[in-house]
Length: 387
Image (tube, rainbow, N blue to C red; front, side, top):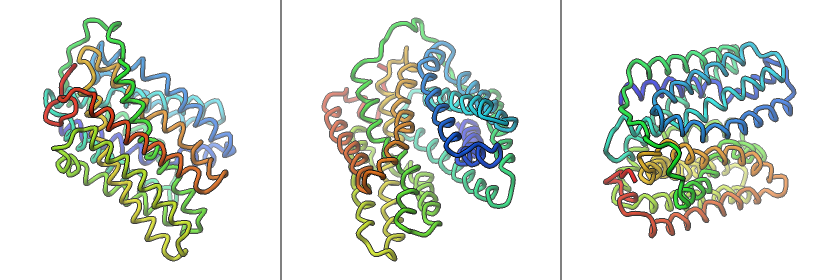
């Protein structure tokens, strides 16, 4: 497990270094207009949505480790593509490679973790992985700020490529993950019940992506100091990179769906608290918004490990790859939708907050409803069945 954590930490440091600067790189280093760069990056993200069904079948056939290694190679090619890009076409190719590799990665990562930790509950290992990845991404983002101010953005792309190669080499040489290939990869359609988990998880995940792209817009439109979005993100990262296992311990006696419902309620509360900032005196807003970010951070640490553990528990062993790949749509679709929700600020300062809060509230109710209908062993962190 240690080798896997180190490999994932290296991966996320590189991603934290370059991903936040993707649009900046395309505009400053390559010279694309911002609108063109934005459309190109969005199109690449959409292309990535085609990958999970293919990735899931390969995971079932050959195991998740080769697929995760392949994802690192594809992403390395994408990062290198940015180094040689000189126009719209080459940027589009680089973005598509990064997006496809990223979806390949997430579609196989949690199956790999499950194989590495073996036949025991996955909540704690998922929390540990989430903490390590969040911490290393935050360190990469901090380094990105330094490069943005004092260095070359090409260094960020080069280091990102190296990080993917290093992760692939470490996974290939140091990580062992026993896997039994699926006997039949054409059967075991994804059930409506599992698809329901995907949809409900996506409702709540929308808030996390809205936080990343929408809160800076909101904060700056309120006239808050320019440093505030970065400090809020740093505080959020500090909590998610240190408190994941604590959240798992504190909720160990609750059904997974109950914990997820609590996370969704906290997200709706966060929306309401953020909207209150409009009515506060300008001098109070920074402290208020920093405090409200803690509410979302708690929601995030409650949500992350339990959601993936529930998906693993509900996925049949013989088609786990396809099920967990399908589950990633709960996170990739909100990534695509979040910018559109942010655009709703044009219709009114309250509109995006209402949309996110309504989605989270619906998710909370749906998780409660699912809790009465899913198998007891899938709801308990004391066991991780293979159905």
